[in-house]
Image 1 (tube, rainbow, N blue to C red):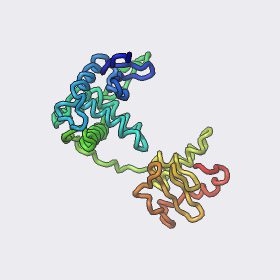
Image 2: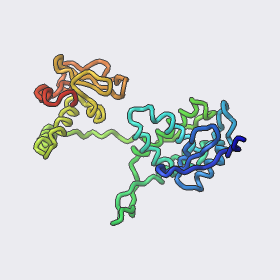
Image 3: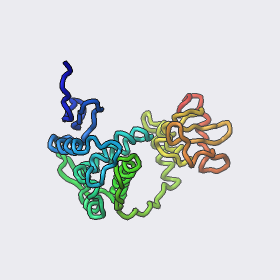
Length: 278
């Protein structure tokens, strides 16, 4: 005789911080919450919408926490740097998790900006004891992730409509660059440091090409599918922003004689010692 189905219920894995929802013939689903009380609310929302497959939820019937969880589980693993989305979600969930999508408006977005704090001092045991507001730029990036999650859920049929997230004013761009002397001192300090010559090479590549740090780390001397490469024989470099996709700004390699795109001369002498990778 078959065992009766247990139905939707909460489950806690020892190696994971969040509570999960388990249901018959369904994959485990994260609630996005570490507390039992909040997880039970997510379970109640799940049960209330269960069986509505194929029909999108009205903004008043789904929480922002559920939207962020869907975005984290379905979309984040497909990007080149999912940890960046993870950092934003860690900041968003404490404030937005229990709010309905219908609560997303200018007032709540401004309240989030006031709520958002960072730890600036800890006690001897490592517990936070002093906080300070984060920058408007940080809040803007985090709320941008919330907007992206809402848009994703709408396009995937989880939401009937995605409200507009109100972002703080875009901060003015920093117009401060290293002087030639400052760059020289930075490179020299790294080059003379203990086992730090690779950092000097990293700095040189960044200064000469303007390539982002993640892309520099994946670069090599031979054409590859995991990062960019320097073609020292022909005097240009090609960078990939993500696996299998060429960055729009780097689809056309940057040829000589542009001094800002020319590979550092030290790379030519380093190629034999360094092998395939930078």
